[in-house]
Length: 394
Ligand code: GLN
Image 1 (cartoon, rainbow, N blue to C red):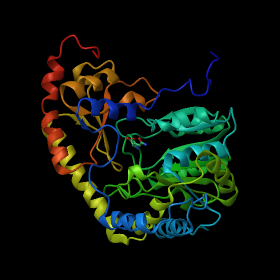
Image 2 (spheres, rainbow, N blue to C red):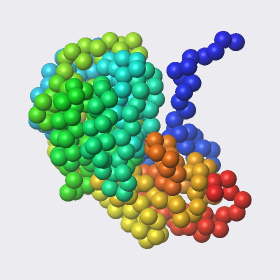
Image 3 (cartoon, protein in one colour):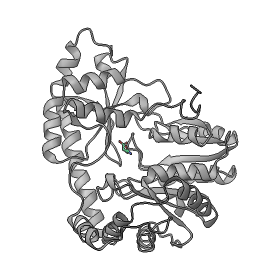
Image 4 (spheres, rainbow, N blue to C red):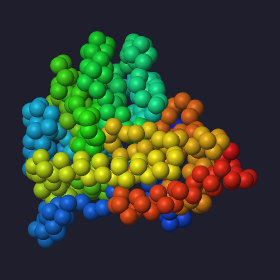
């Protein structure tokens, strides 16, 4: 048989999503792929029930139903202070996964260099490969996940066409400061590069940290491509509702790519989700408080168990340090942990370009009962891992 495409050959399947499948096989508590086990707001699901009777059930305008785009624009202006034209500056996509892919296809030529901070959300690796870009990785150095300004400038100097920033950051929980964002913006302007932001955790930030919108910085309105989604904000990861916000010239391209990739996001789901987009500030305050509560239960529990971890400033992941168990292969360790401890994590190596094997990522977007049960199981980790014999991961 003929060979298949070399593009799709060079990356693996998503380890995050693979861990979910293994977790399901062993009926473990799945703290690997980040999604909540609690329901979306009832008003949104009630609205979905109405929509199932009333419609729409046919295609919306390919770049998104007008009322949905209007609602996104209004919410974005409320939080970022930036007013955008919902007709020419937004494309609604199937999750921010498509938003990012369509963005890359729209702004990058094969062979172009794209700066990616490491650790990074694993999709960015595949996105760069599929769009033909060559990633330049710039380390965010643990435990603070700061970057070296000189290393970053060196990366820009290599004629990078864009930089991808996940803020708040998956997997390390970093929330970029105003000063850091201003520095990145100054380099993007100096070296004429686009800044692609993944801001899906914009409302999951722990005090006193604060989310700053890259697009709101001087000179960045035209140069920033915002990728976002409703998945995390409204606990509807399965609805696959995302969007791109950018200047009209970029959006014109993204519209075309999106049109041929997926035609459009699900019309009934857009209609129902407008209910959420119209919520007032109370909703976002409650969401942040709920996540602060889940974080407190989970990291408080890890403290009691004497496990070392990075305390996130935003998003809902912790990187737990498992070096004390002599882990050499973190993927095998995570598989072992699913079978022997009953808790699923993502091996840290799937996020780092550097050779890092001593971190595993757990998330805490879960009900109190789920978190407490996960902690009860994790209480056996130290003993089981320390005493484990003939394991493939050591
Ligand atoms: N962002 C989530 C994570 O990192 C998962 C997203 C996805 O699988 N599409 O686990």
